[in-house]
Image (cartoon, rainbow, N blue to C red; front, top):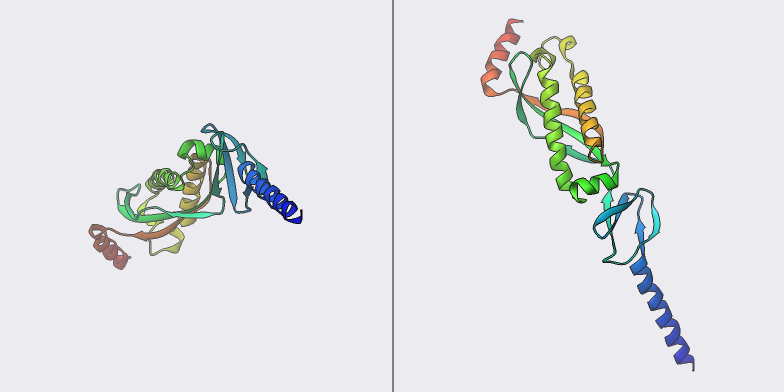
Length: 194
């Protein structure tokens, strides 16, 4: 008699565990989630907690990291307003702001999102650098340098374009600046003259 009750309790607990795995899922504090119904994003979840869902194949849950992520653009040659070339690398700090939009644009793929962010960053960097003369980047006079203004221009452009894809860019900074070999010698000659 006792054995059958124990077996009944164990069976009931196993059934409850199995059903909870089918119908429940957890979102942690570091995550956002998108519930898809038959492949279409139907419910974004941005708050941590325990949630209900229909079992697969009706609904599927895709969890994404909502923490700040860093991304570095390539060290590329970019022309200034006065026609001189610089090598510039820009980095960003970004996070997923709108999980449903991010999921619909990139199918929940962070590498795909970063490829898009790379294009946005390159366009914003080229536009901002192209609006400024060479002296705003490299000069013997510290008052001529305009790094903060340039970084603000890049950030404003990147934020606007990334928001259309479900991403929030919080930081955009120039990480590295250099000169192509063809320009280096001319710059040092000019700096010596100054």
